[in-house]
Length: 423
Ligand code: S3P
Image (cartoon, rainbow, N blue to C red; front, side):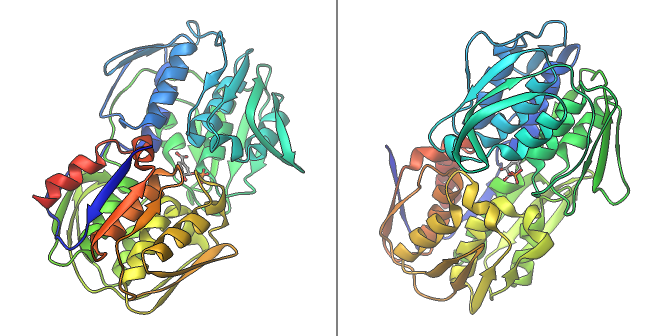
C-alpha cells in the first residue's frame, strides 16, 4: 500500500488538463470492438478501469494498437478464460450487456470491492431479454460477482430502470444491439447519456425521446469512428473544489465534457458562491476558470443527484469548508460504489476535524470547523482518496492518505498535476 502526504496552506495556480472522460472511454472501447473495421480513439482515459475494458475486448478478439481499435462481430469470439474487471463496476456492468448479445458463456470477476457491488440491477433486465446471468446471492435477492453471462438469442424488452443508473441503461442498450425487435429503456430521472449519444454517432438504430428519458434501440451494426475523448468533468471537479477552497488559488481546467447529467456539480458550487467561469469550447465541452471564494452551505438532493453522483465526495469537502449546514440526501447509491462513500467520506473528513455525519441516504455537513492534518485512509476508493487530498489542501499541517494507489483507477497523474499547480 502506498501513501501520499499533502501539506496544506498553499494556493493552486496555473492550468491543468484532466484525463479523458472515463465513461466515454469505456463506451468508445466497447463500440470500437463491435464496429466492423478500425476506429481511432484519441485521449482515452489512462485509468486502470478503462485498461480493464480494453483488455477484455482484446480477450474477445478485438485488436488495439495505440489509438487504433479494430473490431467487428465476425472477429469476436468468447474469451478463453475468466475476464478480470479489477475494481471497475462500469466494466462489469457494461460488459454483461455486451456479452449477452453473443452466444458465449463469459465469466466476469473482479477485486474485493467489485465483489460487493450489486448486480441484480443488470441481471434482471438481461435475463428478461433471454440471457443467463448467474452470480452469488450473498444477501437475499441481491446478486454479486463473479458473474457468468450466457448470451445469444435475445429479444427486446420495454424496461423502466428501478435505479437511476447509466451503467444499467448502457448494459441494456448494448444487449439491445443484438436483440430481436425493439429494446426500450425508460428512466424516471435522467442519467448520463453517453451510450445513446455514441450509439447514434456510430450509426446504430437508436432514438431518444425529446425529454431524454426514453431510449429505443434496434438490432444494428455500428460503423468504425474517429473520436477525441473530451476531458473528464468528474476529475475536473477535484481541481474546481480545490481552487474554490484553497485561498489565493486561480486555476484553469482545460476543456471537459459538460453534456447532460455531468455538470451538476458546477450548479451546486455556484449556489455556494463559487467563482467559476465556464468558457464553451464546441457544443458540449468547456474550459473552466476558477478562483477561490468564500463558500456558503447548500442542500443537495432529489433529481439533481444522478447528475453529480460521483462528485459528492469532493462536494462534501466544499461543504466542510463552507459557512453553515449543508445536507446531501437521496444519495443512497453512494453506499454501493467502490466503497460505502457516505460512511468513508464522513469518517475520514471527521478524522481531519470536519463535522460530517452520514445519515441514511445522505450526509449532514456542518461547515467551518478548522481542518487539521492527520492520518486518513482511501478505503480502496479513488474518489475518496482524491477528495481527501483536496481537504488536505486546507488542513493545518500534513495529511497522510493511506491507500493512495487507488487513484490510478481513474487519474494516475493526479499527484503530478497537483505538484504542477503548486509551482
Ligand atoms: C457510470 C455511471 C455511474 C457512475 C460511474 C460511471 C457510467 O454509475 O457513478 O462512475 O459510466 O455509466 P451508476 O450507473 O451506478 O450510477
